[in-house]
Image (cartoon, rainbow, N blue to C red; front, side, top):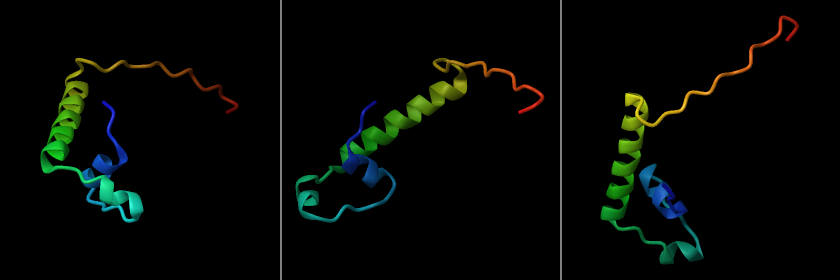
Length: 63
């Protein structure tokens, strides 16, 4: 899932200032859809449906 900076800023409650922020108005529906997509992804990981567990190399005794 790729989200633009303006959407991410809205998700975490930030506002962007500056010249370009006028052109980056994000609709509430866009933010809501992004939040729902993120929540669904987290739920899949918690259910174990799409998570890939990577094995870490064991640490040596001298480390």
